[in-house]
Image (tube, rainbow, N blue to C red; front, side, top):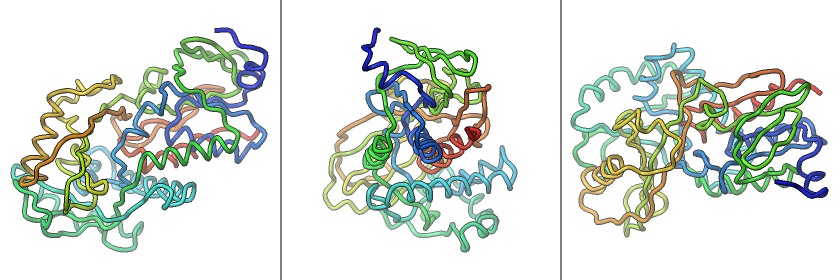
Length: 373
């Protein structure tokens, strides 16, 4: 691809920073760089027409982990590490709210609930027995107990009569979030190039040559914020994890409001006004869902519909309006990978399915890796 003088001069010459990925992390990183270096030329490369990972495809949970998820985290992390993960997620949410007003992203805090199927009786009892300990660990962060027990007033069936409630969990509008963030980044003078896939990069002296599908160019610093696609750019600590989602048509007199978790967070659902959004099912085929292919599978979709029909809305007719999938970035641990890869290459990835909560903080810390110019 050849560029005119004008195109090359405006878009591809004297680039200080190039960010790969225009999700929450990449956009926040760009804002932070423009704040620190107002005169810098910042370019974002995005493989999709819209952000192509999970930032525009997630469920819109402003969450930091259900009780069973936090207990599960303690199997791979120390208590201090688990608590630090929660702190990071809360700090990320606060940064997101400072960057964009809660009203602009339709942030609502109706609380979160965890359900346990009849087959999860032992897990439910284990969570109840350890709830006081987790509340004690989290008390310095929240100043009060996070988790409590409440009744199933939503009409769910084939689950335990009691639910575990988290008063601090919220939900937001992913589309409004990304639209507002994109507008703010563009207003700051950052250039975003969509439908550009990075194939390779190489350091050349004090710069980095970036090779895309159609052209190559040079940048001073390269910052990788692609999360689920990071392994394709040589970040081995991250594995892709596909999440499949569906949403119903409007349901008259929908009684459900809030965010809900099931089976250690492998399933999650919420209301969007009078619709239900439901996602998950990766646990049905963990290896098969370790992919960057944006596709749907009958195995997962049938399970999601079965949950809607037999557990969530047992006596309510519904129709599915839309289905989609998104790609998350996972790993052996949930701690994000924020590091200097080489002299002029950096990465902020592995958000562990908590992109809304932690994406802003990872973007900020990624920008912070750049030494003063």
